[in-house]
Length: 65
Image (cartoon, rainbow, N blue to C red; front, top):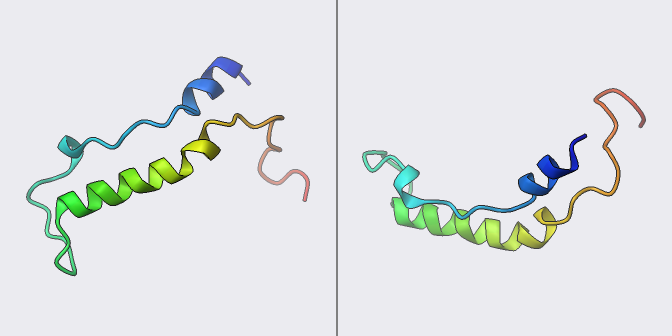
């Protein structure tokens, strides 16, 4: 596995609000801003975990237990 690619993948990127469909109909009186803020909160909480590259390659699907 290419270590550089793994390190790039471990850098969390903030969610941009311009990527949301402004015409979307969301349930439960949610608005796009609520979803945007919630997604950024999740990324912030996961950030310390995401930044740590896996110490060894994971087994391919079906290998190991």
